[in-house]
Amino acid sequence: MNALYARSYQAAYRGISKFLPWRTPLLVAGEDSVLESVDELKHRQFTRFLLVTDEAMTNLGLYQPFVERAAELHIEAIVYDQTVPNPTILNIEQAYTMYNSQNCQAIVAFGGGSVIDCAKGVAARVAQPNKLIPDMKGQLKVRKQTPFLMAIPTTAGTGSEGTVAAVISNPESKEKYAVNDTVLIPDVAVLDPLLTVGLPPALTATTGMDALTHAVEAYIGQSNTSETEAFSKEAVELIFNWLPVAYQQGTDIEARKAMQKASYLAGLAFTRAYVGNVHAVAHTLGGYYNVPHGLANAVLLPVLLRFYGNTVTERLAQLAVVAGVADESQSDEVKAGAFIARIEEMNRTMAIPATIAGIEESDIKAMAKKANKEANPLYPVPVIMNRKDFESIYRKILA
Image (cartoon, rainbow, N blue to C red):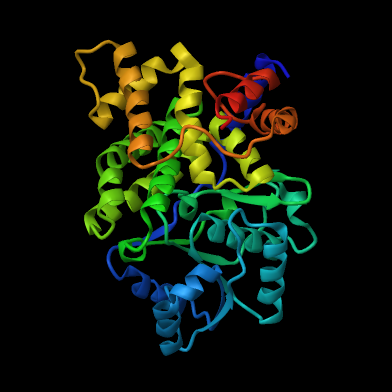
């Protein structure tokens, strides 16, 4: 696939996207906002909803106050808590069956990005009962009204509470792919920093770098709007200032608030401006080896930024000033270099490795083929990569 075709495809998609029914969720934010958010169910006269979560949330009892508050308002929660990291088609089908058999009227996702993606998959199946998830892979294949969806993130990284994307894994084919449709944007997003104070430092680090990857890939891509640029810049500034604090002092509420906001803004940025080759590679690592998405992105981001070279110098220089790692008097080359160097420094400080353990040389060609198929022609990246380019990236991060 040549670069001219890819750029033509991206230009056409940019034109189409202007006419899509974009929306942003109703935002409920602040300490204890998770309890306030139950009112959004009551206002809509729901009496039973499917709560999509995972066993960790059940064991921690984190959603229990929400469920109890709903019960006080005579709203019943039907709990599905079998979601796994990198949620599978099986997860979605199990939860979808529960939604139907229990006559649910709405969906609430309570957990990290995997939980929210699983809930979006259920919403897609409710909207399109005659289509399986693989039939809706790619762009705008849901197209019908989904049930009410509330997203309550317990991490600060994926931004899935504000995006069009549900990223699903198929362990049998070792695929990890996105179902993208504007109807999957949640109706309500709840950002309660108290839900994230218990995040361990390692997860705080990788989810935070996931958010940074979203903001940076959106900003250096070629499908920006003035709005997505503003979202990306604010997200980058917040992450550089507050992620180290959240990592070192997990109970710092201001840091947790800032990271939730950054994750949300980065999600709003990439849902319009798209991600890039970092994600294409990261998704294959998740599909083949179940590498956590945030970890993969954190390792890959500086590698891809260096690979892009001069094509991203000007954009990274702008972000460097916003992030406070360079000043206007320096050359763009110095600014861009400082930006990448700070990302690498943040990774080291937060004990994020520079390589990914477990990658098999024998898998690289197949993974590169999948990454190339995901990225091209859709992602409006600074450099259109080919299979050989992708193979070289995997080899750079071999442990």
